[in-house]
Image (cartoon, rainbow, N blue to C red):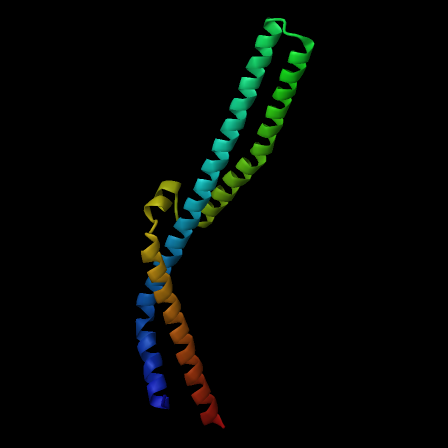
Length: 160
């Protein structure tokens, strides 16, 4: 590529910069929405696990209370008491991951351009459209960097 062609290419790319900056902003917003949606799904899954564990605790406690009321044997009550403790441990193991997921989502939302999860969901982009936009922005960045480097190399050679 000649010096004139290199500088002409850089000029063309520079003219495209405002439009590409807008596309970059759309991409950043879509990626942020995608991350918030991913974290929302994690919170939902962790909440379901915690809810299930809490149901196990309630069921185990109810079984123990029935056994006590029915004057079940010591062995049966011991086993049911053990089930209550195991269910409680399971619940305990689920609280931290749920709270961590909620915290991660809140932080991501706070750092995002969105006021709410619903607003982020509305900004989600189909995967194919998102991939196309990523490729377009990445290709532009690469082309611009290459053209700039080539023009800088020509300028450096002229200074010698």
